[in-house]
Image (cartoon, rainbow, N blue to C red):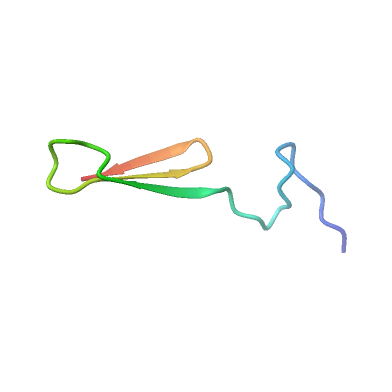
Length: 44
């Protein structure tokens, strides 16, 4: 079965790049920014 690439070039079963940025905010005891594609989640 051949995989059809998406406009971004990813194959259907490939995940978007995932990144974690520790210490994202200065005033929180601990924080991390999680990014996957255009989605961002800030955890404090």
